[in-house]
Amino acid sequence: MARFPLRLQLTLWFLTIFAVIYFGLTAAFWFIGRNSQRHILDEGLISLADGVGSLMVNFEGNFSNIDIRPYQPVDREFSLLAVRDSTGTVVAHDLRVEINALPPVPADSTENTITAIDGEVARSLVGRAIATRMVTHRVVTKRGAVHYIDIARTTDVGRRQKLFFFDVLFVAGMGGLLSSTIAAWMLVGRATNPILRLAEAARRVGPGETRLPFDSSGGEIERLRTDLNDALERLDEGYRERQQFLSNVAHDLKTPISVMLTQSQVLQPEGSSLDEFREYRNSMVEELLRLRGIIEGILTLSRAGQGEGMLRRTTFKVDDAVQQCAARCRAQAETANVRIETRLLGSGEELYGDIDLLSTMLDNLVRNAIRFSPQRASVIIRVEREGRRVRVSVRDHGPGIPHEYIDKIFERFVQVPGANPHRRGTGLGLAIAKAVCEAHGGSISVRNHSDHGCEFTVTLPLAA
Image 1 (cartoon, rainbow, N blue to C red):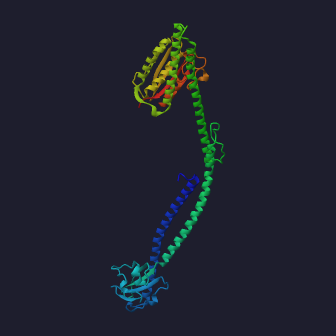
Image 2: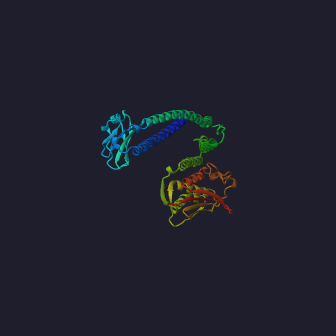
Image 3: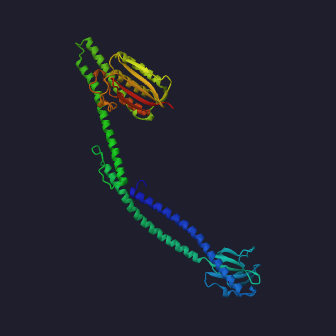
């Protein structure tokens, strides 16, 4: 069915549901009608037998010599077959009836006994091999003698009623199916037309067109169009961010390569002093380290942004991670004449996460604080518990972050202008810190202090 158009699929589903309901109701009506019709036939047969029996009792004193012809029902569907005494002996019968085919009289005092007969038995009693209902009715004469009268009724009328019933059902079913097909085709066409128009509009969406050029009459289609336009805007925004990210990556990779290429072209093997070669080497090492930092930053950012499936989680103590971070950054701090102070919990709280990514996040925050701290200043790493979460804050005493960059500082390749070029990083450290923090279900924030410096605060959930 997937190969069929949507309009045809919905129409076929509509007709299938209609057919199932229709035939289910038909079967139910047939079953109910069959039982109720049999009940009605039996009630009529018993009522007639009771009337005939009353007439016989009123007009006949002795049933031993009775003529049943005057008591035959006017309705030809009914036949008075025989009159029998309490022993089952036939005292009078219709000349067409073979008395041997009569069923035995009831052994108890049952007033009415219904018997279904057909085939040869029916032929012997009513002259035709047709389905017949027969009642053996108990009557008591004025002298107290018990007799039984046998009256039969053919079911031709029931068969004719059933045939008429099925004819009506067939005609009604065909008419209903045809009208339902037409109605379903028209209604489904009206319902799917906006969807087809929306699909046609979606085919025209491209890099230069990020909104669906489509007008609807409101309702669900309008909400769908609005949701699709919002999704397209998010995709377009993501596309622009990706393009900007690639542009920034290309620019940051190009800069150290251009520096190394220029220095390599300027420096000549002949006529250059040893100091010039040393300066060239130091510059090459610095630019290569910068290249490595950019590449590692991009890889870390990509891994942190790929979600839960890429995290290599383990359980570790918060204090241990902070102490190891301080140890790794201490050489850079001594070179910059900056002190690192740690204020730990001392109670053994643990985190459950990717130790490599979380260590990279802490290193980026601490190294960033060292780069912007004045000499003989302190970088303070403070660990505090807050319910089922832990807060790790890194504070420096540098110039702080300009107000207009507070909301942008965690974006990729964003760097505060005017910073010392010798302290310039890759522009990915804070973006990595945010991505790692969010991947672990935490948050990160920054604020400036009134007495110089700024403070980055990371909040992470403790291990369960």
